Image (cartoon, rainbow, N blue to C red; front, side, top):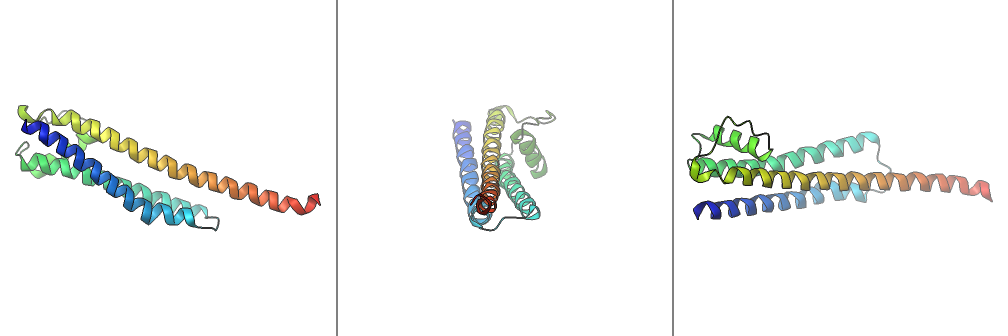
Length: 155
């Protein structure tokens, strides 16, 4: 029963961290850029992509750390470094297999992997949505500029 409660709690904490991270990311990085009226230069877009990527990775590192701290706190792994390593390879589904949790806690490993897949999917979805919007805005500006520059010739 303790494992089930821990599993649900860890999933809830992971999703809460992700949601809070998305909120900060959208307010600090994505929305200010989306509101900009001027056509962004390629360097500005590159910088925004780098910032967004680094922030998304940071969110995942915090989530991996939450699971790793739990493993360490419960004594499921011998030290903090091992707990964070195990959590990282499990969350990312790399799963080297060089470490396993003790029998009472083994259910957590596949659940962490599933949660990691879902959170990475959410991050990918947000990344795709933001980049798609930037491309859509760029196309609208380009086609609008072409229409505006062609309009006087049609008269």
